[in-house]
Image (cartoon, rainbow, N blue to C red):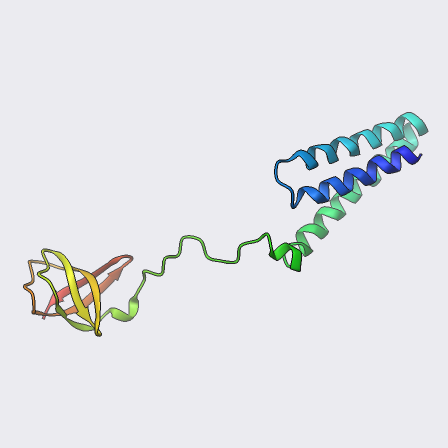
Length: 151
């Protein structure tokens, strides 16, 4: 009886430790301990009690998993392991530039630099080449591209 309970508790603790330990070693050992505990329950107590031990182990795993998914990510300990930053957002969308007037700082053939709102902005001319010093207006922002038109 003591060996069955010890194996089941050790399996549960090792599965819980797997959430913070790399390498899957603790998780594999935890699953093996749970399987060993259930098998020892069948061997020591017979089929009827072994079935109850198996059912209890599966229900315990299900409840533990639901509690872990519900509470671990928002816990103080869980926040150490989760990223809250946005992946892939480089902040290139600048819709506030649309309609803004500016001046070509370099010749736009078709790409170059314009001064828009007092800031240097990499731009692309909509049509033909725009000479340095010509007045431009932003007509579109498409990701990294700021498209301007000569005014």
